[in-house]
Structures are given as C-alpha cells and as structure tokens.
Amino acid sequence: MNKKPCVLVSGGAGYIGSHTAVELIGAGMDVVITDNLANSDMSGVEGARRITGVDIPFVDVDCCDRAAFAEVFRRYDFDSVIHFAAFKAVGESVDNPMKYYRNNLASFMNVVELMHESGRHNIVFSSSATVYGEADELPVTEKSPRKPATSPYGNTKQMCEDILRDSVGAYPSLKGIALRYFNPIGAHPSALIGELPRGVPQNLVPYITQTAAGIRECLSVFGDDYPTPDGSCLRDYIDIVDLAKAHVAAIRRMIENKNKERYEIFNVGTGRAVSVFELVKTFERVNNLRLNYKVAPRRAGDVVAIWADTSLANSELGWKAERPLEETLRSAWAWEKHVRGIE
Ligand code: NAD
Ligand code: WQD
Image (cartoon, rainbow, N blue to C red; front, side, top):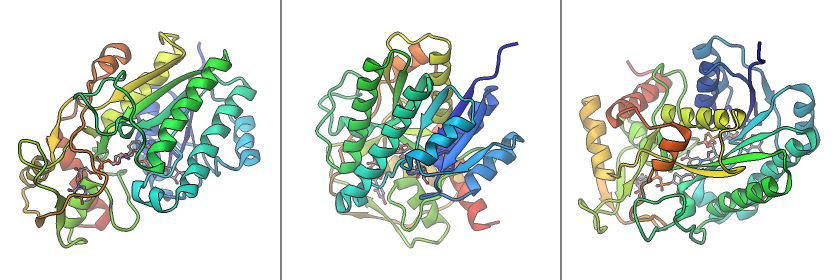
C-alpha cells in the first residue's frame, strides 16, 4: 500500500492554515502544523483536531529560527509544505516595513532552503491578488502584469513568488505553486474554526460580524463615489473552505506529477465581483439582521476593483469555488456568535 502523503502546514494555527489542515486530512493526507502563535492561539489547531478527530501534531516554532525549524524537518516525514506563516496587515507593514521583510522573507527562505537541503519536493506558497495592484484589465488572469507593490506586505508577496520561481529553476528536485488568493472570508460550517483578528479588524467581513455582535459601533463603507455600479469597491470574495480545497488540489497536482511547469501560479477566487454594499446587504438578508453602517471617505491605497479569471485553476487544478456567498456569510456570523458566546 502507498504511504499517505504528509504535508507540513507552516502558520497552520492561523485562519487559512487551520481550514486547510482540515481539508487535507479530509482528503486522506497526514498533516503536521507549525506556528509560533504570533497572530493566533491554539484554538485553530484544537478546532481542526475536533473537526477531524485527528490529534494533529503541532510544533510551536518560529520559521525564522532556522536551527529550530530544521529540527522539524528532521523529526517529521513530510514531502510537501504549504507555507502560510507570514504577517499580513497591509497598514502595519507601511509603518514597520522591517518587521514584514524580516519575517515574511526569512521564514520563506528557510522553508525553501530546508526543503532543498533535505530533499523535500513540493511547496505551495500563499500569495495574494495584491500583486496585481490596480489592474488594467478585469478580470485578472495569471498573465496579467504584476504592478509595483503599494505596501511592504505586498512587496513580500512578489519577492517570495520570485524566490520560489528562482529556487525551482535552480533546484531540480523542487516544485512550487503560488496560489494568489483574492479575498478569503467565512468560516468552517461547524463554526469550530474561523477568522480571529487581533484588535480592530482591518478587513471587511470581520468588521461586519463584530459590528453585528455589538463590539464595533458602526461599519464605515470606505467610499461610495468609485466608478462602479453602486459607487463602492468591487472584490472577489472567496469562501475559506473553497480556498482550503484549492490547496489540496495544488498538493495533489504536484504529488501526482500533473504539473505542466515546475513553478506554476493560480488565481484562487470565484470569478465574481461583489461590491461592498452588496456584501453588506447580503449579510443582512441571510442572517436576518440590520447592520449599523455609514458611508465614509475612501481608504488610502484601496484599488477600485479586482476580481479573478479562474479558468486556469478550474481546468488545471480541477478546482472551482462552490459555496454560495449567502452560505459563506451565514458561516461568518455563526463563527462570530460562537466566539462571543451569543445565543
Ligand atoms: P493568519 O495570521 O491567521 O495566519 C498566519 C499564521 O502564521 C499565524 O498563525 C501566525 O502566528 C503564523 N506566523 C507568522 N509568522 C510566523 C513565523 N515566523 N513562524 C511561525 N509562524 C508564523 O493569516 P491568514 O489569513 O491565515 O493568512 C495566511 C497566509 O495567507 C499569509 O501568508 C497571508 O499573507 C496570506 N494571504 C492572506 C489573505 C487574507 O486575506 N487572509 C489574502 C492573501 C494572502
Ligand atoms: C475589502 C473592501 C474596502 C473594511 C486586503 C489586502 C489584500 C489581501 C486581502 C492579504 C474594500 C472595504 C473594508 C471596512 C470597508 N490580504 N472596507 N470598510 O483591501 O481588498 O484586501 O485583504 O494578502 O492584500 O489588501 O480587503 O477586506 O480590507 O476590504 O468599506 O471597515 O471592503 O475599502 O473595498 P482588501 P478588505
């Protein structure tokens, strides 16, 4: 019998990592989670353990600590890594660029180097639609040009993509897939794992759910005078479980040697543009509540509109976003209620 594939999920205690661990296990793979809990706590790992019924191994380690991280590579028998471990607050990265360059670049360089040195093969890197900036043509395809990054965070995503491309080019045993996520939202249907932002949420959906829970007084809709149908920005909101499943497809593609190039890039979105007002109204409708919101000035640095052409991921990964926005927004509220002990 073939051995089960084993995947190291770095940053697996976090929002996307914990959901991905669940889907990998659901797909019959073994998982090892590493995280230094810099932006998370053990609830993500514990939730993933409860959902799967598997006592997922967890190692508290900073990927930037090369010696300590190397120990994980000696101890566990995995052939693939999904690298989520990074800081992700765009505004903070502008104020404290070194924090972002040091953490996001050093951690990824350690992953790549340790994989190369220990003869591991497959890397999935968490990239972002932020690399497209304000796109000239919509929807964006993987061939759309990357625009100069408008934040150090965005720059770390571009630089890590390049590090992966160059390393795969130089080290014949390595294969890599960069997944460019659009806007991940929602929570697992069990409401046992979800997004846990620290402090005031920077992203739209956690701000909405915290406002609905009474933690925030009022949602500010940043701008209603954009050149879009209702004046608010357009984004491609991708369900977190769908996003997690894209990682399973990416890992499988490399394990089964189905990749056409040794380094590949895929957009992970729904292909559908949704405005801020549409999202707010859908949230209200499906959860049967009224949200306190007001129009506020535009937020510096926001792009007007971005959504994905997902045809490459659909055809090559055999993956497609499936969960309707309504269900995703119900899950986001169910998770917020679970966290706050509401109802
Ligand atoms: P998250 O903060 O919930 O998860 C990241 C995890 O990495 C956290 O648990 C954190 O403690 C850990 N971590 C950070 N630096 C580490 C280090 N040096 N060593 C070990 N652990 C470390 O964020 P997320 O939303 O789950 O994002 C995961 C990845 O996806 C990140 O790379 C992020 O940049 C990328 N991404 C996120 C989004 C989004 O909107 N959430 C969009 C595009 C890309
Ligand atoms: C979505 C829309 C806001 C909050 C960011 C990063 C990107 C990626 C995903 C990591 C925008 C509006 C928001 C609020 C609002 N992360 N909004 N009121 O900016 O598309 O992308 O997260 O890679 O790199 O930049 O996501 O959720 O912040 O905003 O009106 O309180 O909601 O203006 O139009 P964004 P977001």
